Length: 147
Image (cartoon, rainbow, N blue to C red; front, side, top):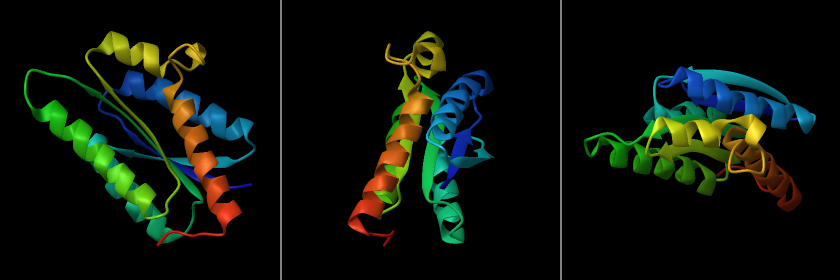
C-alpha cells in the first residue's frame, strides 16, 4: 500500500472539491492511502510537491487545481508555468499526475471535474490520480527512483 500526496489549489474551492473527490476515490479504489495539502493557487503546486518529495513520505503525487481564462495574459502564465513545473518534477523521476484544469469558463470546469462523469469527459481528478499511480508502478517495475 502506497501513500499518495494530493496537492490541491483552492482558488476555486467548489471546483477543487469535485477534483478532490475523484482523486480520493481513485486512490482508495486502488488500495492506497492519501493525504492532502492545500496551496492558494496552481502556481504553488509544483513547489508544494517538490517540498513534500524531499520528506520521503510519499510514493506518488497528484496536483489538482483549476485555471479559468480571464481577460488578461495571466491565464497563459499560470496554465503554462504550473504545467511546466509539474512536468519538470515528472522528468526528475517523481510520479505526478497533473489534474490542473485549464478552461475557458466555470461550466467547462464543472464538466471536467465532476467525478460522476467518469468516461464522459469528467473525473479529471480521478484521471490524475490514476496517472500518478501508473507512473508509480512503472517506477517500481523499472527499479528507478527520483533523481
